[in-house]
Image (cartoon, rainbow, N blue to C red; front, side, top):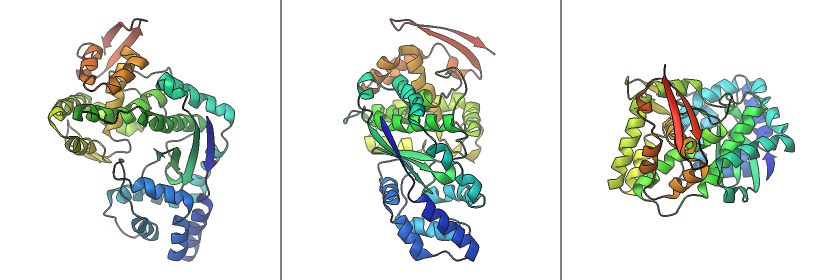
Length: 358
């Protein structure tokens, strides 16, 4: 596996921002030149793809944002969601840019951790396909901290607050490569119900295998802490855990009678950066939307209960998720507010567990 780092746009965009701060003039012509650089062209292709989540930012909208980010509100939800984070970055520019050194300091030996996480979280045949990836660093046009696209893995230099150290970055890097490889697993012709649950596997399995995320009723994959998990979001979902998981399962049942287009609209309700609690009715902004948490709980549970190879068989099965889920529910764990779960998977994949309620 070979990884290259491209940060060609960071210096010119930083210089443009500093000059604008110094003179009070934002040079639109120069800005357009910077946003036309190859690394930004890749960003615009990704954010212009309507089949991807968190998409829908045009070149002109990006120009407008950088010219007026501290002067007005934006109708585009991707840009309105970006404004607060970007202002914090702009007001602390030099300190925030030091985080780039975390990424630039990565050595080939550091990548052993990434490879180990991917080995744990991908089928054997896909591990042979790990190839060349480019880590793309920009002061991003969008509001996502990172995304995969083709063999590119993008990170927004203005939005690296959750990456505190090199180890955290390596876990996030593995997360994004997992997305790229995961997409190669998916069958072309999925049933509507299969398509619904696979959308939760996309982020859910990445945080399960690569971020060591736990949820109520689903312990972490490995010993130790979680990496790059937004604590406030996770607490918000834990408070409505029962309601959220039950709604996802109910929507999955409904999906059987829907078209794929209808399911896509249903899934998008879980992929918004604002979410209304199913328990209290409170609406709040979230950084990691509900598919992260619910997908981690549901699909991570299958990994812990059935094993990795069986998990990926279920992923490709046209109607296998709910049947597999019934094998791994282990009683009424999903309605408990707290549970300590010890899981022992035998070679024949028969699962035993003890649940101690607290």
